[in-house]
Image (cartoon, rainbow, N blue to C red; front, top):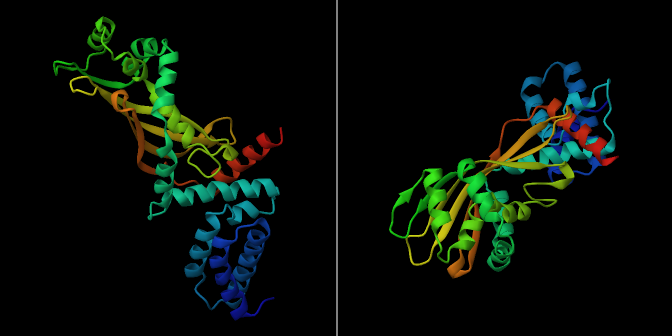
Length: 287
């Protein structure tokens, strides 16, 4: 049994320490101390446990170490504990009010290469068919003609593109969801938005594209909402994060840029959801 002062303040000290040192042994120590403190306070029946418990539980939650994760019925493996910690760590970054993670992602996508992307479009003439046959109806599409006319009807846009023999061929090939591919690649890394160690996947929805041929330097601007998901442990996917992304391309200026305009979690993940997802990731890693 711990002394009252040591157990209470020792646990509170560990709250601060866990943010800087989240190795498995430290996390286990914190979980053990949390149980001891709670037991002590219950026996003393003097301190308002309901005031202390939410503080400890909140810190534990972001590292996947609530009481549910350490029940007597199931003890997670070290790898599962690590995955719980990684999920909560990403969730914590998404909820940070300082926008450091958003800034980090925007730095990562600054290195897009216009030359490489335009060369890819040059080498893939079939991309124009992707624009005409799929993405004109899959995306919210707007085209401004050289005369300044605004077209939004997919059939009218398709007719204009097919009859246009100008120098805008590369823009037509780029005017589909391929425009987002390099950005998603840049956002995929160990500490990025799409994390392979979490078996993360993505899909794009609510995408729009404006193709402006009315100016001296024709260009396009596209936006999409990127959804990031992880395995939920039940043969399905669990939505984890969403990002609003803008991409601009101007062949005449050799400019290809992107920006994450918005970033946030999809919803609060329960302890059970995190535990199930972590277990699924651990099973995938062992295959």
